[in-house]
Length: 79
Image (cartoon, rainbow, N blue to C red):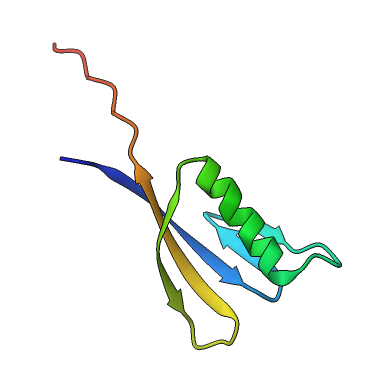
């Protein structure tokens, strides 16, 4: 059976991304969609795949859900 790990990312297209307690702020002059695309490109390089998006009631804000294959857990020694 395949195992996955998941990541949830809060995206505010006005200039903030938050994931697992780490904040990313858009730089002055950086295009909004380019800021988000650059972040997603980095996650893609780490093996993350976008699997869903949940728009929020606040305009321009969403949760992005991503997954990637889980690393195999090291076998526990038999005792």
